[in-house]
Length: 420
Ligand code: LLP
Image (cartoon, rainbow, N blue to C red; front, side, top):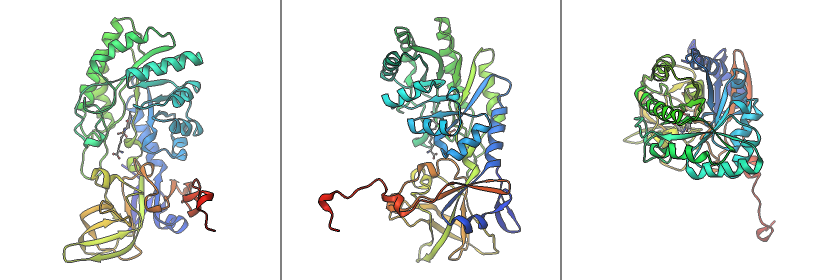
């Protein structure tokens, strides 16, 4: 569900024609719909209304501070994985008491930053990390609330690069090490065990892997409780998928029903870390057709956005719908939609049925709101696109297009090599 719709053959975001935004800000351009984000957050969050819970939006999915601020207004917490994400979340007005910190490689500096901000929970992913957290907490005399991230060895049946809950993945602590680590943590009074956590992967399209993982978490919770631990939180991570092509992921209500069933009777507060399901379909990447060309085998549509702007097709062979901004009666052709980057992997679609386009036409690459701009780079010294947030008939430029000066702002020519 989203608010990108055609009116009289022209694509709109909420009440604004995309064409108008492009006239103002150029291409490539990320356009987000505030109404869609709000709606997704509300539907997701209210699906869990029957139990005490906190929805910690996963900042990595889209970390623009304009979007974080919108979600802060909705009462969202944040799931972060770096000091940078913590900085953004705080700047955007998300209270530290609603922030959980995941990730296998938190640095001592990041841990100190988060401790001083008094975040809600550290999701700890190894014995050594737990030790480091304990040492820093002791030095600062700040108790460290933590949950261990268990690796439940459950197959989420998603793309291998985004599955995280298998033993072969780097994430979390093997189940058999979980209880010994909680017992060890008792030796340091600055370590405060407050919960247990898992996150098994992203873009899941069935509930059963979530249920399997949660059953294992429940078992661990029960064992720990019988050992005298009082764990207030169960954090089940994120991962709920969205439709990109013709997937039919569970609706938030089906997802919550399955989860609440497993949690029945446990006096816990649930933490959720959704990312993609909140913002994925709330954003598009608008791009302009630069050239078209054909050879005996193929048609190519060359657009002004590249893999540096949206890397998902290149990295995961991900499918994104591509639709015209102005829909004309045209015959359908089969073409590759490709960017200007000097890599054969720089494509948005291969052998895709698409209406014939002309030079200068605008195309919308759909479902680009999650893991889009956040994964962009300056590869090929390309300037990263602007980002616009539409809310009803208003629009806000939430990130300016980069300039050539931005590109080299942090670089320097050593005096030694100066010729002019
Ligand atoms: N919590 C943790 C600990 C995570 O690692 C992730 C995502 C999430 C929550 C949010 O997952 P979501 O609800 O968005 O599925 N770049 C990839 C996705 C990487 C996901 C990484 N972790 C992509 O473009 O598909």
